[in-house]
Length: 196
Image 1: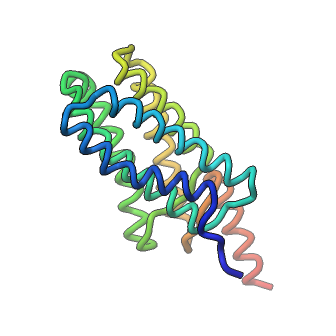
Image 2 (image 1 turned 90 degrees about the horizontal axis):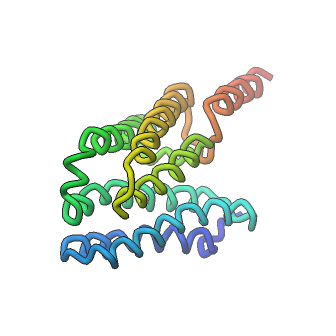
């Protein structure tokens, strides 16, 4: 059976991935307002693609990977765009931004070292973290208070520790692992099948 590649969730993830170069150009050229509105739309695609994949029964390994690449591209480019558009915010929130970048990249590097690909776990914690981080970043870019961004940074670091733990205990790559507990249960089930 072959996976269907063109689905609504995959189109949304693809749009997110494709929008990153445009976001970079807008930020570099100083178009803060246009950047902000496109950034909000792109964050919406991040929330919508996973929800629609589950509701429309269009979850797939390809979709999980495309979603992860879209997330990775967006999350890695956002601090650079913020530096170009709002350097005072980046200076003020530098320690939190560094924590986000380290918290986001270390699990990816560990996953690449073990599996030679993005982990694509999409844990419950990562989903919560993405929503909080998106809302906190939007609020921050809109000139609002920084408490939600700072709180979401702490949540992100905790969820990334969970992702590292999943990578450590999982002998083979799997996408869409809801939690560390699920990874442990799946490993026990795989060992039990291997023993029978």
